[in-house]
Amino acid sequence: VRFEVSKVLDAIEKRLSTDPALARGVVDLAEIVRYQDLDGGRPSTLLRLGQVVDALGRFLAEENVPVFAVVDRALLSDVDLSSNERMVIRRWADDGLVEVLPDSGDRVLEVAELTGLPVISRETFADSGRAWLKQPGRLLVPATGPGTPRLRALVTGTPDTSVPEGSGKEVLNRLWRCPEAGCGAFGSGRVGRPGGQPPPRMRNGVPICPRHDVQLLPVGPRPAAEVLVVRIDGSIRQRFVVSADQSVTVGRAPDGIDQGPGVLMLGPWLSEEARRWISRSHVVLEMLATDLVARDVSTNGTVVRVGGSTDEADRLLLSKDQVRKIAVEDVLELYPGVQVARAGRLDSKRPVEPKSVMAEAPTMMIQLPQG
Ligand SMILES: [Zn+2]
Image (cartoon, rainbow, N blue to C red; front, side):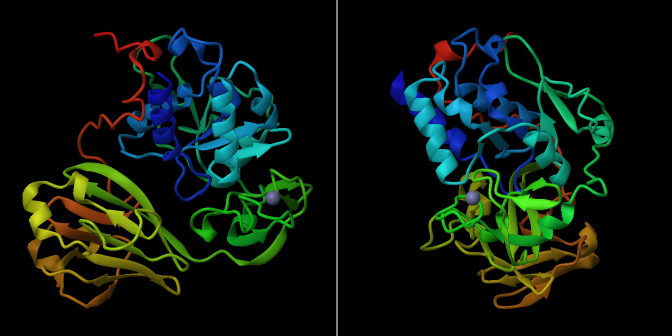
């Protein structure tokens, strides 16, 4: 059982991000781990985070959806969790994958407010004084009871992601440095894209490191970035960031680099025909100043659907080494049905049952969906 649990935790780990450009929802981990009704198991288990991650993917109809998890430090000594689970959370915190705070307070609401991300919670936050929580899609409620976990928006309608005036959102336009050595969020301990820093915690208008509770020092402007998605056969498979400090090579299996930031490997999602057509490294996306630019590096070329048009007359072929600025509405096509565009330009066109992070979970841990 232990072996399988650790595989599930590895799968969950890949779906944690404190990068505001990548995360799709904010959770209070101490709340989620106690959703005992989901499986009728132990009072607390970290596996419930996986069920909530799965539920978010289903709700958004997207694959590989990451969450921003806020962790009150008290959880690290919560004996309802296994010692292994507590160790895993500590490791996630050291790598900057989750945010551990001495006192999480209303940090979940603060992150959601500054980033426009939805809060995933069963609390109503009725006395929080935050009017935006009543906007459509800002509060997603995990259903109670066993079965495949689902989320429902407390208020339905076109999701609102606006950031209220006066919330201090300008702090997100800058990069910050924590004076504490090796800080995993705002320092040399950070894993991943430097420009993917989480929002600072604001106290009386002063930005603070959430983990170390000290004032942050300004480093400079946050590098220009664009959030993109890849859609294959009608489903959004992956969201990724192209930024001035991080170009991204997209292809069947881009060479020589770990599958991390900077590389988007499409291979596992492709049909055999698409796999034959698309080059190992097919197109490189980068930011030149504030422009998103595509450089074809493939054998067969990259199609630009100008303005997102499906009209053949608006189809433009980028051949090897050709470079083109990608306008807001443009859609890149590496092969019919394999498309890359800015997030929001492409939706999943068919119902998505995203691959579960719980696939390896011991069956006794999860109730199978009823009917
Ligand atoms: Zn710090």
